[in-house]
Length: 335
Image 1 (tube, one colour):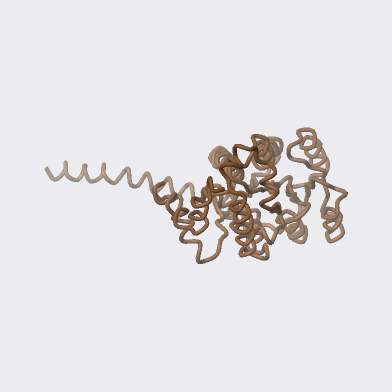
Image 2: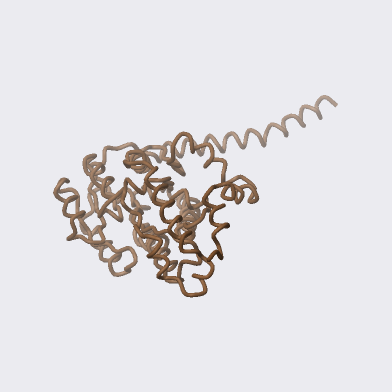
């Protein structure tokens, strides 16, 4: 009886030991594959460097010794020229419209011809556009344009450059947004593009783990004022796009209130990009980058951490409690 009990205890211990050994092996392998370096001999490709996050990240990585390929939509524009003036000869401006397969392939050829000895360490998929409008104020083309840049642009760039990053066992970084999981009024097209981007990055992370390539997602909150990415438009701009049927539904006064509310909300956000640039640098250079970087205020962090796990009835109710949502219901169909 005692021997049977002893054998049972041994059998019970084996699965636990196997799990612990497996986890230990993964940690050792992860540590072995992770490298801290100062950038010398490595290259990084960044899309969307004309302004904002990409522009500032390119300068920071240039100062750290990386060869930086800065993709710009307008290589002769003021943003690209300013970046070139403020950087070393290791920074190279590329013409790169991420919606153009021709541009992406030409950029790949340029990168391959100018790679430093240690290869392409990272691709930072930063290029993006934003806009705001309720879904019924939008057209199919509005959605197509948003998705073509924010989602398909990143996919197009990733597929082209993955072989080079895989060879260096490097990093793929994607700039998403809190609107990838935080659904609210006026951000339908943007949310669709960023939710799709995160799904792509999540799938890629699982696949690339076998090759030692790490994938990180950057989730900025309200940084519109710091980056000037937001499109400025008035209630009148929206009103003039609506057909007569929608004008009967959406009151002109509500459109003006929605415009004012949106702009005031954006002005309440972060006024500099330090938090985002620090996260990007960590994702590119840290031996243990995070899977996700949620970049909001300390006060907002608890709410946004909790939001994806809340029941839908509660997440929807969050908006019904806002003054703006109440005003919307009051003004719909009003003459």
